[in-house]
Amino acid sequence: ILRLLSQNVFATSGDVFIRFNNEQRLRLLQFVTGTSSVPYEGFTALRGSNGLRRFCIEKWGKVTSLPRAHTCFNRLDLPPYPSYTMLFEKLVIAVEETSTFGLE
Image 1 (tube, rainbow, N blue to C red):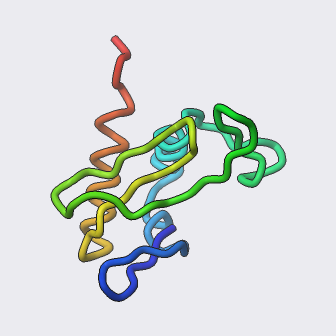
Image 2: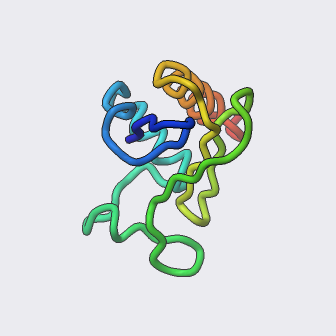
């Protein structure tokens, strides 16, 4: 859901998340929101700790950082990666490596 713009600023589009398979999309949703299911009413009905909270993406960090999520705020923080390939790879690492966090 990201398009690389000039000066490494990201804006929403469908370009990167299209490369994810369905299982990866569910894991990404869980990574960002804390749940792997979309509300019946759609993304606009996502809830945070204080009621309705839209999914959002913020620029954050350095190119060497992994993406991070704030599940209470349905927020994904993305570093200014220089390419879609790097963005895809870093998202996969972040999502896959944290999908088993705390589960043993």
